[in-house]
Image 1 (cartoon, rainbow, N blue to C red):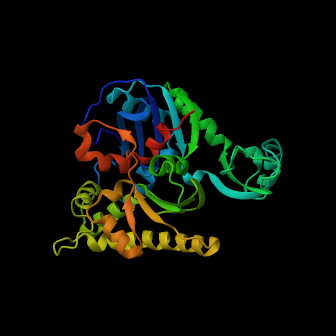
Image 2 (tube, rainbow, N blue to C red):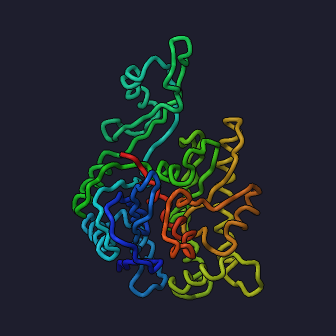
Image 3 (cartoon, rainbow, N blue to C red):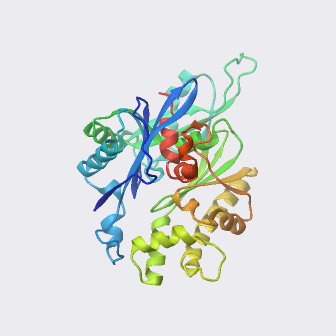
Length: 366
């Protein structure tokens, strides 16, 4: 059963802006931003998620309700239309994200002569790094941090190039879905690129973003604004909810309620701690392993760790994650550079964590 969910109970005014649409495995999140006097302004938002008919766990529940992306196009189109209708969103220009696990991205070093020469060479070089035939992907690339005022004497001999590839059939599918929803798809973007824009802005320092989704966790290391290393770990918020439901023999709905209420508070009556901590500890372990691999390979220290995703709003989650990781950890603020109505202040942290990818998408200048 599909439940359309306007989670924060606040109806914003209509506008004509840009939509960011994040189609995840457990929810579709839509946010609408508009540029006013050089600032992004939040105009509207909404999402829908999947739940079983009675909210109870079962042996086959993960196959039945987990992955929106495996649904027929028509059901996804219906879900998007329902959110647009219930939130009274009128904008039609869209930037959408491709999930990290469906894409390939890396930074490579190449001899530098000119952009024209690079454009000719990239397809041949890309074959060394992309694990599928190039005719099956849409290839994109950009030069990292080359000054525009170079002279012949100051031209570098090599240059770093950010290389990205998206399955061609996925791009066609997203075009079909957005067209079916009556929307104008202006761009498709890597999920991690959208997160970088929303959370870091112009901050180019080495950073780790841990994006905890409903079904999986994405750990991405960025430097100078580009993805350098990423790792997808197949445990997310839903797995924790299911662990609580099984431990206490309660419905998924009740387990979700307990998770949000108690989190990882260090109190005697918090009986859900043991059901959660082992899974969170594994997330921390995967994060530490990814960071260590990068630091040892690149001989470069990570300056900060940012957490995003709905799970980060649980009581004491960020503190526990920091304690176990042994590094400074903060909750990422995707709305730090967005103007929003003051009435949203009580829920802005939850909104920021939940709509981080969608916000970065809507910020894209196309």
